[in-house]
Image (cartoon, rainbow over all chains, first blue to last red; front, side, top):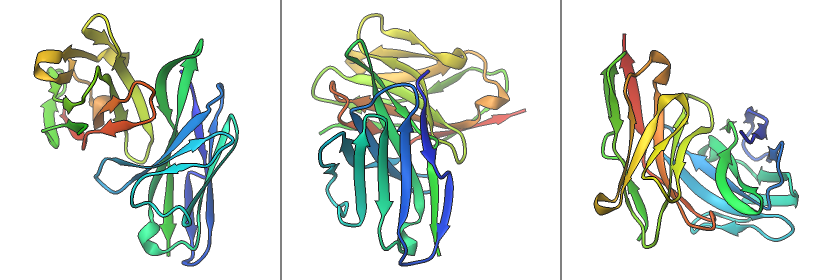
Length: 118
Length: 113
């Protein structure tokens, strides 16, 4: 099946620093990628939709200046957590829509990035 | 409003026993339905999906799910559970253009030896 990768898988940073997480679609092009956040023992919460070549669309309540999203190519989206604080510690998961012959097939998920802010 | 309900937070079954995980949805149009599985510290793996056609869909790892429009349900089943099936299972509804996915709260499956 289609593969979506994330890097890094784990990151620990100090409060006040910025952290960049990469999401790549390895064997397909994705015009749309998504960023989710998952708290312990909870479901996924959609943070934003990342559109190649245009601005991301953020869900209500998500600070766009804090969670910067860049979708510079058809295979790469990045999420930068700026001025991270301990409450930003979470599991961040990206996903990408796979199209087969131009038809939407499904959404594939990356393995996630565990962010810990000290 | 769109929503997905997984009424069982935890389920424990014995290895070799059958399994059914429940999922009910509320969606204003024809739903695109998915089941994903998540192992601890991992991302989500697609088990199966339903878009249209035969309401009984087969997935990977021996899982199947049945779409019942009258009950707004998409329950996941497996005839004989293996210890490696222990994980968290998420049901999801997708908008037709896949620009929104609505996830249930998940069901954690424990498998007794």
